[in-house]
Length: 179
Ligand code: IMP
Ligand code: MG
Image 1 (cartoon, rainbow, N blue to C red):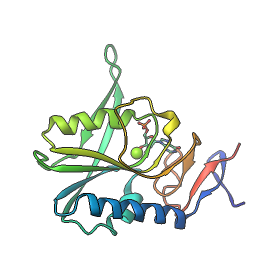
Image 2 (image 1 turned 90 degrees about the horizontal axis):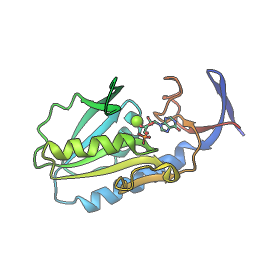
Image 3 (image 1 turned 30 degrees about the vertical axis):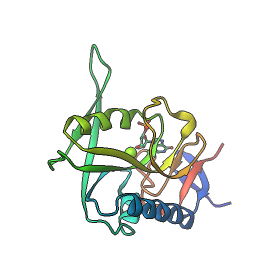
C-alpha cells in the first residue's frame, strides 16, 4: 500500500485517480442529460474544487458559464456564530440555473450557508454537485447534493484538490489518514 507523509501525518492511497475520474465522468454525463437545452452557471468553490471542476467541465457539453468563488468564514464575537461571506461572485445570477461544484460535502455547513445566499440573489435553481460526500456526517437534512461522485466514510482525506494545512492539493489520487 502506497504511503505518503504530509506535514506530521501519514496517509495511505484510498481512491486512485482513475476511479475518481470515472466517477466524475459519470456525474458529467448525468448533468449533460439533466440540463440538456438549458444554460448552466457552474460555480466552483475554491480552493478545494479546482481539480474536480477542471476534470468535470472537460466532459460537459452544455452551454455554460463557469465562475469561481471563495468563502471566507469568520466568527462573530457575540451573537450568531459562524458567518460565511461569498467572495468574488461578480455575475448577476438572477434567473440562472446554478450548479455548485464542491470538492466534498462533510457536515454540510458550507452548503447550508451558500445555497440560501444564491437563492436570495435570485437564482432560478441551485443544485449541489460534489466529488465526494461523507453522508454520515451531514448535519443539515435540507442539504442533499443531487450529484455525488463517490460517497465515503468519515475519514480525513487529501489530494485531488483537498488539502492538509494547505499541502497535497496537487496529488492526482486521494489518500486517507493512516490510523
Ligand atoms: P462542510 O462545510 O462541513 O460540509 O465541509 C466542507 C469543507 O470542509 C470542504 O469544502 C473541504 O474544504 C473541507 N473538508 C471536509 N472534509 C475534509 C477532508 O477529509 N479533507 C480535507 N478537507 C475536508
Ligand atoms: Mg471546499
